[in-house]
Length: 131
Image (cartoon, rainbow, N blue to C red; front, side):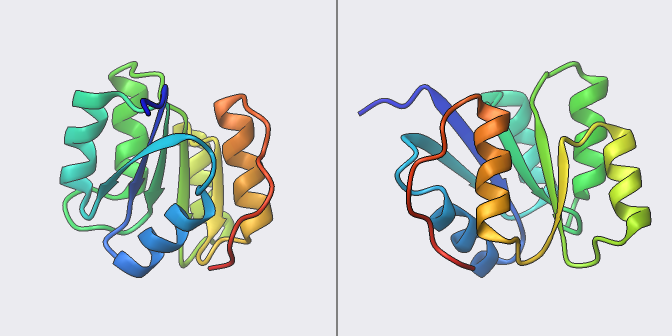
């Protein structure tokens, strides 16, 4: 089955990547993974996903730098940033740079799923797992 929406999940923590992917099961989405900011940037440029979920701190480029690249290169990809230290300052910087939302890791499943649904313009399917 070919899915029309592709979502990038970029995080150097494989457990967190798996958790976020589990939260998106049943959405009829193609999921692309990256474990570094460098890999994520290549995917953003090459595949232009419908949405990017980006860890704030990764090797290569940070989530904040990736949000900036997306905006400057006019890729029009909505970005959600995930951070273990989602302080007010971090949240403010990410939102100013163009992030759609910022979540503290591990994300609250219901809130993250709702934001993903909003970003993709689709209804939120039932279910979902906790991180």
